[in-house]
Length: 638
Image (cartoon, rainbow, N blue to C red; front, side, top):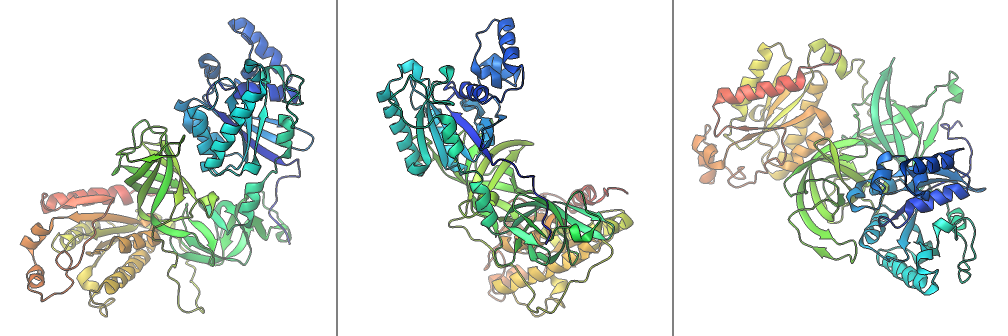
């Protein structure tokens, strides 16, 4: 059985992040390590020494890591520099993370890639706030192996009592953060003199433990990768490509493995199929040499035995172990934004390869990284850590970080800048893990030979679903029909699905109980999706009172779905009462009437709001036409 090609055999690779308070000696220690391990490019040290002489500054070991001129000028590490070195048994990637609080984002970026950490503490200055923050962040990012390097021992006369005191303080703090004492080791060093770096020196005879490099050599590489390989399959779709008759889903396996013949379910969207082939690059001309299995960490393409509309950001999993489908989560975040996070603000959440519009709903509390206390706050300021509840406009496929670190992390974006990152906690949140599946096992999807982009090219416009939601009397049907006519006159393939019309046929068997309303919207959503796949712009006019039902349609339809809130207050709609329904509801003739005896849940973040209480019909139609043309008119390649 062929397997997707893996990197050539080599020494185990261990990624180590060097963290700690600014000026506690990270870059100096790394510079000395690289020198003692013979990892510097030929002539590098001489070139740096000559540069120091030319600039009139004293040579520092830290300058060997000074890839950025700004770093040398400012005297602080502002980027997470990566360098490589080898011993007889390991190949190391050393990550020099900045210690200055203004660059906490860079520190997190560097630490997120690491297998273990060296946490530096200045023997003279002791345990500082930024060191405590870095320790907290290391735990937050899942790093469990920590070497505490008490640096600059020469400045305290190599005093054993000072080392013992500091080592005790730091290890106790790490224990309070949940670190296992057996995976934390402390070592006294003096990088300038090379004490306890490559070998034990003579300045600290009271220390009988191994030197730093021996500690690093003892680390077990690939622990996180091994955990991921044993975890459920998470195949992240990063792109969809069409070659000849094949539709290739390209992506990366973050955990688990898959094989030809496996049935894979993609979330959100509830699409599934069996793996027909695994594609790698370069492709072998001999089919017998093509892989039949792929595992954690590999970037591959797959084809399915049936054509399904699957988009970038979808998560592939085996049916028995799917990710959670959620539209709300608690995120333990680190905030990087210059502007504070404030409840009610919208952010783009990047989760795996998907992007979702989210609202920061509530700030549960802000955490102090030093003493782990919590406090209430109306905002999260730069470099603060907080637990925040986010709500998305549609369903997201995700895992709790505690269950699956690979798919339990996200970043937040505002104005095209990363402003935060976080870990997912789903405790206390509803998840929709049971997706709709056919009752019969003896059915297969029919593969269309014409895909949506081809239909778009033929029509001269894209397709999609304009989902009107609002109270009875808000103007949904009126605007939907006017919009249909306006788009049709412009040569668009367009059709309206109206709430009253479908209840004369497709949904004639349904009433207005919550369960029947849910089924009504599910059926209409499926029909709208079929029409959109056929190339139509579908306009739906339904009260659709429940947010979860609308979100369910969005989850299945993906980017085809556009929610439009036809907004008017209840008193405005009741004054209009074009069908006399409010009057009947007030007298009890119509039970479970939305707005009177049944709830209406307004959208949190619709694509468009049409205020029919304050705008004339023509103005509303004009806004709708503008939105539709801007959304559907441009077709790549047309």
